[in-house]
Length: 69
Length: 191
Image (tube, rainbow over all chains, first blue to last red; front, top):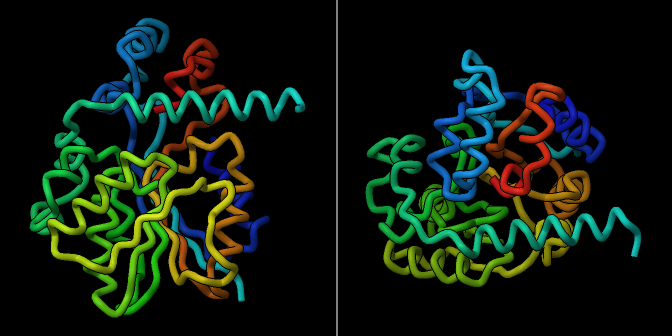
């Protein structure tokens, strides 16, 4: 899911004060640390994603908000 | 059943199977996300099963005595850390749809000497808690696994008390940033 979609869905659910508190690049090597990303997928990512993008295929974010009163 | 709902069921089954099959040690994930002070006293049971994607608890404004819902508790690393933060007058409701994960969390809480962690079996799209019953929702790399994310967020809003806090870690991907064969790969969803 894209970050803006996530924020929009939070707003629609009644959350306010939505902030992105942390943002870290998420690369193929990060994926490889997780057993849920199987070897086939990791190999596919290395093959079809341009090498210059391998270190940032997604982002890990921390999202903080409050439920509106 | 509509096609969309069938797809939803298939995706949930895929995620359930993927997580049930995890048997490798993921201590390296915990060491990448948490510092030594945060992990001090957290049982190996939880550290070796860490599958989070960031450290949202550093940013969560958790008051002592509050009731915290950990959405998709996994092996319990965040539930244990949050339980210490809220203290004995508060509690952490550790929700997961996998019995194995709930057992790991319960075992870890017992090993950590915590009696304020309450494992709860259920799905994040239909949280088995009353309205306005928790002060804070936390979650780590879990909401992106749901095929019904809007429903999950609506459920979070339902169970939170007015003014309650929400602080989660997750993975975001911009549209068209990845090749379609990657985005549509089943393991990409489960991961």
